[in-house]
Structures are given as structure tokens and as C-alpha cells.
Image 1 (spheres, rainbow, N blue to C red):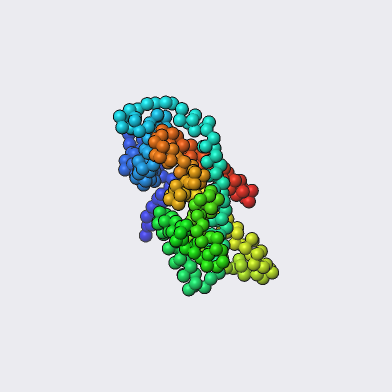
Image 2 (cartoon, helix red, strand yellow):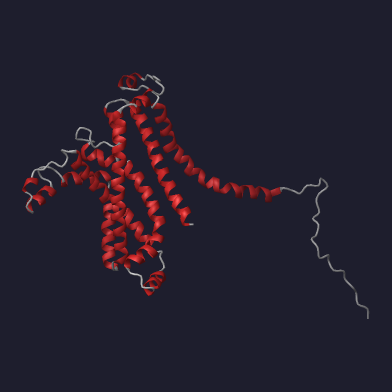
Length: 329
């Protein structure tokens, strides 16, 4: 009986037969690889196109308008009078612009500090409450957050009205008789107080709900370990809660700076920048100079300068945040 031997295939890598030309076929496999590389860009393309149309094109038009001398006469006669950097020169060399800029920065700083402190406290309170009370408080926060800005501003106008306002009526009932006919919009300080209450009231829900959601990601085992080590409530907050909440606080503060700095509707609806234009912030100042005084080119220049200032403020804040994160690492 004879055994037929079979040869084993070689153990090394097998050579791939290539055609006579010496190059491998690039066929559908190479094309599918290219399509896979382009897929993220194709998915982003609709959002980029819509953003450019809705934001980029108006910004370009506003930039072109800022280099023109466009008043009502030119607007009616369809005249285009280019004046170069004259609008920017008039704005930057005037005292009003820098006064309004300082007022806008201070206004933003005070509002953001109050919003973040009160919003964080409410968010921590939500984490401590029981289910029923938490649901009730969340419902109230969502209703305040969902109210349209113009509607909320109108309600605050009614609350602080001079003759029939609820605030004056309550203050008079509890013993402050001099507040019965007090005009809250007569001075700069009191007008800013009303606007500040409005903005803080509308902004606290976002911060509180965001911070409460962040607290749900903290493992409970960390609190148990801290309690076993003898840490009190304050140490648990500084050593466990705060490190987890810090990224959320950074992001929320960044958003609040942007939203408060451009709070046009609240300031304009309450008193249109009055009295005597003493409560104007940069968006209101740009609108009044552009639309109110019909200096459209100058209003466009102020609007672009406002964007540049806001970018400078936010970039400065981001640099501080990134530096702190690098130090922690």
C-alpha cells in the first residue's frame, strides 16, 4: 500500500498576481475609501451652507454698509456713497462709544456673576430635593425659561409701573408709603435694577437645570468615601462636587457672557435705553444710532465693533479657562 504525498503550501506571504502593466487595479475599493473620507464633510455641508446664508451673508452686507454714508436721502434715492473708514473714525474718536462700552462690560459682569451664583445654588438645591418637590421646582424653572423675552419684559413693565404696579402696591402695604407712586424708570440705577432682575430671572433656569444634570453624573460612591473620611458638607462640595461641575460651569459662563452682552430686547423694551440714553448698552446704542437717528452706516460700524469687542471678551475668558485646565493637568 502506497501513501500519496501532498505538498504543503508555503508558510510565507503569498504573492499577488498583478497584471502586465505592473500596477494594482484601483477599482471600486479605492473609490469607496475616498467616499468614506468625504462623508463627514458631506454631512456638515448643509449646516455650513445654511450658516453662511443666514449669518455670513448679512454680516458681509453689514460690513459693506459700515463703509458707506447712508442716510435717509441716500436710501430713498438708491445712492451709494462710499466714505471709507469715516464711520469707524467718528465712532472711535467719540466719547459716547467708549462710555457705552464700559457700561456694557460692567452690566455684563454684574449679571453673569449673579446668574452663575444663584443658578448654581438652585441647581444644587434641585439635587437635594425629593422627587415631588424637584418636579415642582423644575416645572417652574422651565415655565420661566420658556417665556418669550418680549412677554417677560412686558410683565416686568407692569410689575414696576408707577401708578398701578404690583411692586409699588406691595411696598406701600408693608409700610413703605413713599413707594406708592415711585417711578422705577426715572433714574439710571433703578432702571438697571429692573433690567437686571429681568435678565437674572430669565437666565437662572438654564444654569440651574444644566448644573443639576451635571450633578447626576457624579458617582455616589465618592460621597460615601468622603463621608467615611470625615469630610463635612463643605469639603464634599469642594473636593467632590466642584471638580465634576467645573467644566459645566466654564461652558455655562461662556454662554451667559454672550447672551447677556447682547441683551438688546430686555433693555430696549423696558425703557428704550432711557432715561436720557443712560442705560444704553452696545446693541441698543447701535440700533438707536442706525435706525433711530437714521445714520445707517454708523449703526453698522457700531454693530461690527460690538462683535469684535464680544470676541475679544470671550477669547480672553477662554484663555483663562484653558490655562487653568493646563495647570490642573
